[in-house]
Image (tube, rainbow, N blue to C red):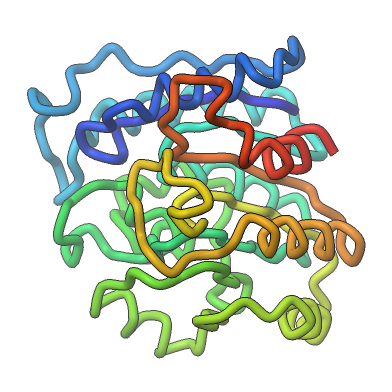
Length: 269
């Protein structure tokens, strides 16, 4: 199942996240992508906050819509063009329910594992992994098909971490090396008997000197060539059942040139 879901409300004001997602959709020009409508509920500067989550009503309304679509189609695989990282709670929890040995590879500069009450921004795109662990806002539990365990999470490109997030990573020794080591990642996944993977790819995992058309720009990131090598190695060694490309903000298709290899690999292979 291929999904276009340009959710931006999880990032607060979400400047250019929706048009950035649309640009990737236009680049791929693939009619198989199904568009999931976003909420009409006021969000951004005019939105209300509930449960320490900005734009809560809009987010939960549209994520409910996403869940119903996935539940209806019951796909074996999911590819998503987004949007902010908060949308991941639905496809990851669905695939986790479907495959008992799922690993989650989180290509991201940020840990995205805050509880709402600990989040400095109160933006939901910093909370999806904590929600998937079943430790987030309990009012959002109906959006999940299942919950994951900490041992399923594996970070790549992580470098901008809140103290509360680091504490959560440390509690369960979540895989979070500061430098990429593809062989070590594969060995770690193999040691856990993981055979299926979801590849979450937030473009801010990349070094801004390689690609800077991202919602956040965090120095000392992954080189594009290393990200491509890592994705290729994971595809060769595991069954990729889900993938996403998120939080690119350029509206110029030509500016996607540096990352077209990543987009093509994750969305077409």
